[in-house]
Image (spheres, helix red, strand yellow):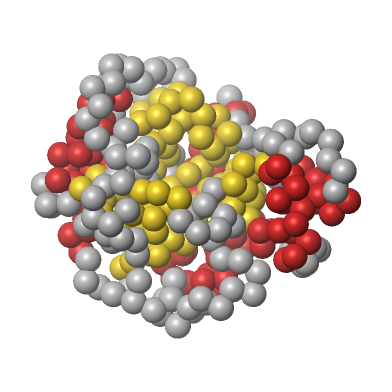
Length: 294
């Protein structure tokens, strides 16, 4: 029972932080200031950081978060705000898109409608391919494309991306949703081709192993990194305890040793504009579908 309450609390805090983000993401505001305010809000509400708040602009679909001393300022971008909260390892994961240009209403509506339409069909036994079909048809009805190589995912304790992959297009996957599962569904819509690729230098990481390393800087980073419980963290989360050169050098050594996974920003291949909408869900043991982050 307590674990169920942790999932519910994590979802509630995530939803509050997501809506709070709308008040801080404004033209002229530094991305770094916005990220720090959102993460401070999560902690104020009693949550831990499930993963660094993602503030991905325009054709970047995911995996950008500000770096230490980041000078980037919001202007007229399409901003994907992806927020993760941890409560005793239970994860809330939700996203919205804020159009500071006020020029992409159909793009935002496409991903949001896709998510809303999926909610209408969610129940134990529904096939993952049917979810993907609903998302694809919703987005394509706007003349836009779903991003096919991004997907929703299972959620487990201290694990943001576990097992189940929930597609954003009709894969024909007959795998069924089951009672007792927790998961996130996140339609991405784009004016581009509907595919993303790695782009630029990673600023988000997670620990995947703890093999010994010789590099002294890397060894000093390990104790700080272990406090994240293998959840994703940002380069800026290690600053100013370590300098940026120390962090990059240490993370490079840890990656070479197979201890660290990095998450480069994901860019739409045709540089199409991208929107995202996301909720976390639980199907309880009685078969009831709970939208955790509504």
